[in-house]
Amino acid sequence: MKQRGIFEKVPGSGVSGVRYVDTQGRYRREKGGTKSAAIMLYRKRKTEALQGRKLPEKLRRGAKPTLKQFSERFLEVVLTRSAAKPRTIEFYEQQTT
Image (cartoon, rainbow, N blue to C red; front, side, top):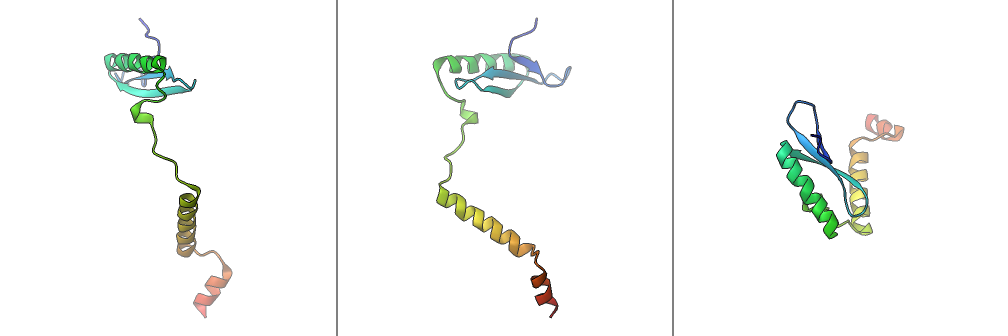
């Protein structure tokens, strides 16, 4: 019998997953392992959604960086990449002279 919210990734592989809707209305997919483990995971996620828990522990993300942290990291990456791969003609002219 077909179980609601349970799918097999590759038919015949024995690797199952779950698909459910969280409290925010987003569709989520997770790997569940065997079919029985996937059924238990599906029931757990549906219970959490009914209780109003926002996200499972595994899907929570850390704190977002501040604008200052983001801009510092951005400048660091841009400056190191531009120093590693110069693209101006003037740079090459300076190297040859």
